[in-house]
Length: 78
Figure 1 (cartoon, rainbow, N blue to C red):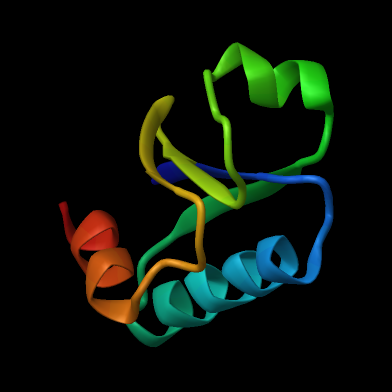
Figure 2: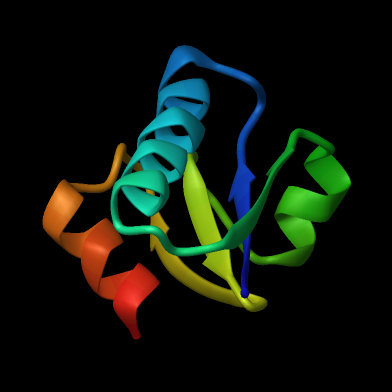
């Protein structure tokens, strides 16, 4: 199971990112543990300067925008 964190302040883009990743994982029947992290100190600890950021198994794979479907699918399948 992949551990996914979406880092952000709770803005619409951050919320949408969580929704999209969850929906695609459900479509692909891939089990994930997804959490939304809004604590600025935690976000800064990952070195993220723009949100939303996606952290998978403690690796920053994306930041600054809502990720595209193709990217999400590749992260989930890896």
